[in-house]
Image 1 (cartoon, rainbow, N blue to C red):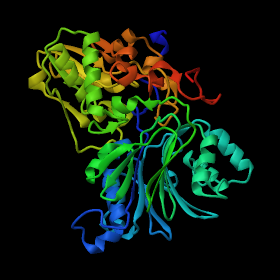
Image 2: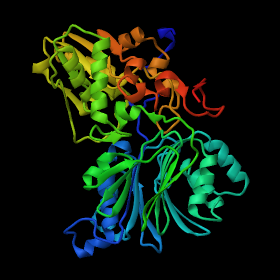
Image 3: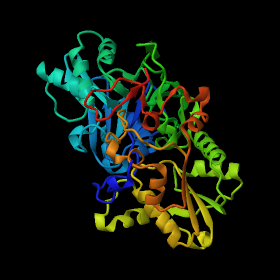
Image 4: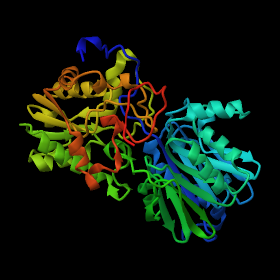
Length: 491
């Protein structure tokens, strides 16, 4: 590829990160108090309150909208709005969400615009009652399904692909809801973890490849479903197990009932959950995120030795890998960049002419610590490269004599169609520039990536049970013809 053909500076302003999918939280209170000492007047809204705390723990997975739906076993009520969890809910709103079943959702839009109409959970009436649905992931055949359903008379009120699932459930709902879910799973393709709530039960669903995470927890005799184990920890719930790929789990007065559907697919949990998305204190499919990131850093140091004085991280997601890099290389680790933890990911973006301000609001170099040092800066990934370039410039201005950038994942060269906001390949700098050219654009003395084989070596079974399509181009599912990229399918 020719560097001269790329005009990165003049591209449309976009977040220089792999933006998350969504976060799910649900709880079924099984007829007794879930938390000792809870005042009697708060028992009726306890499911909503616990769901609120779980969503707070999952806020990193989506910052555009938040919502909670509850059932009192007669009707389903919902409150949702644009904004962060603490902006959408207060004590009065939570107090009005009464019922012993609740599901919640935090959203980052990957399919559909950032509009309140697309906020979840979606709540609707159908011939057998009411349903609420929350979805994490992305359907690769949503467009074709939407056109088919619309031609058959279906009406859509949002632009999200989750409403396609809603219409399928309603269409197949002549019998039990579990049967409608199984029929819908035959139609939908791609990535999905779902929480579906009727007036009397909560159902969790994971796609046949397990691309997006979902786990089961227990709080006394009460049952929980969540995207990550950190949401269980915050409410004091015990982790039970992960939902299997292709599994349907039903939470009701009888406990947990499991239905295994569509067997025979290989597991393909998104490896970027470990690289960046998930919280480091979460465990996904039996692997701790913090330990996985440290292992990536150690492997990165084995593959790429640098003569330097100091290892620093781009906080927070790059910190575990930087610690691993420092341990393996023997180069001391230090806090060279301080993060402003009072700025959320949704703060107002600066104008094009004030681009550097966006990074400086979030990160500030420790000048006295960096001055005169040869620095290895460890980050988890590079998407567009603009943020990395600004940070390297800041480190040089702070007195660093050399800045070597070490990335604890392979180059991101391929778009994701499973619920991450990188559906356009032209937005990925590694898809357009060779490694040396990226390093020159960023302004680093050297740029080093973790190899794909090195990344896989950090996981059980040689990484064979993970989707790494954004690095390799090997997608675990078939993709539509209009997806805008050439693909090598790994079926």
